[in-house]
Length: 68
Image 1 (cartoon, one colour):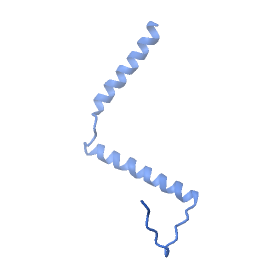
Image 2 (cartoon, rainbow, N blue to C red):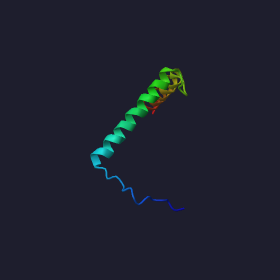
Image 3 (cartoon, rainbow, N blue to C red):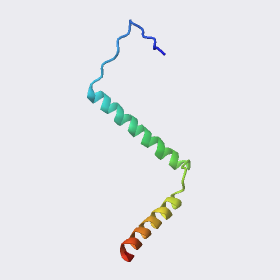
Image 4 (tube, rainbow, N blue to C red):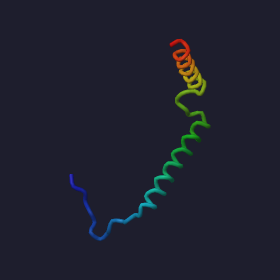
């Protein structure tokens, strides 16, 4: 498929700094939106499940080190 290009409009040139600042802004917006959703209770995995998984992982690692 070919894209239609309007010859009256020229592509906008962006500097590296503008690209980086846009990326940073998009990243900040994404993080802000995710935190807001979590505060509203829209998270996918409850915190206690993540805490249990972390505890099991650490306990398994310690057991591996101690009993090896």
